[in-house]
Image (tube, rainbow, N blue to C red; front, side, top):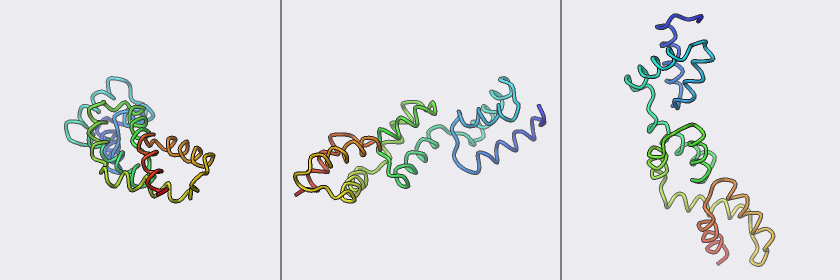
Length: 150
């Protein structure tokens, strides 16, 4: 290993200070820095104990950020959090933080941008498919499209 353990901990703390990180990201970064399994585990425990790493805090920040900036739906956010090995408890807690009214309003705004005509079935299907790809739930999409076409 090229760094001494205190230097390594300082570097990884700066890495965690820059933005919220999940355990998987920090673990991968430590391996990139040349740590072995025992060192990685020791450092992770230290980071968790000192509050630099918090899975629940990461999940809430990640889900809120992706919803606000990229307008992702819950399904896509959930999938991405699972990919990062976040626990189901933290995922559910993070998704519960997304405001229902704002979520539905965002969905309606996305639909309005696509300008679906009343009897344009083909465009409606494309929009539904696009929104499902963004992670929105089919029942909410259909409800929002109905409201939009009144």
